[in-house]
Length: 221
Image (cartoon, rainbow, N blue to C red; front, side, top):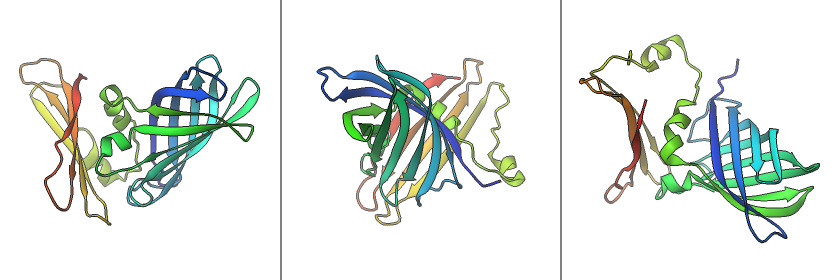
């Protein structure tokens, strides 16, 4: 079995079709599976199954596509999806242009173009809803694990009060030496009140002060 990585993502936004005055609402749901272990410092190719919904035009649950994940090497994550609408074949082509000075915004905004039967049919922008979906998005990731990794990476919380569990990842751009810190916590208060999860993202340039962490709002578990 190849060391693949899987995750799920969805984005919301609008598309402005050629010849129409008003944009249409759009939603893109993706289930992604890489061909190899996903590492952020290299380019990773992935295949995707998708559901494409455009108001008044289509709801295609059998769309397929490919994603090029290259946040550090090429500074982009490119999405290409093929779907059908009213008997015609459409191609979705968009990419997130990654900026280490604006990591949260650049990794959550996806400009795109639509082609219909090979000709330009529209343009739009989708956005990942960070405040409500970041934690489910991170929880959807599945990486290949060995027995030893399972022992160390398995969640420790057993549902009882009086527990805090911290997980974090650090990344470094090999060219600029800029660092990125992703931090996530699960907190179960000792007084028995509802457990919750929260986290933040912080940027550390090689020179100068680090950025103020961008916090993810608390959410009941």
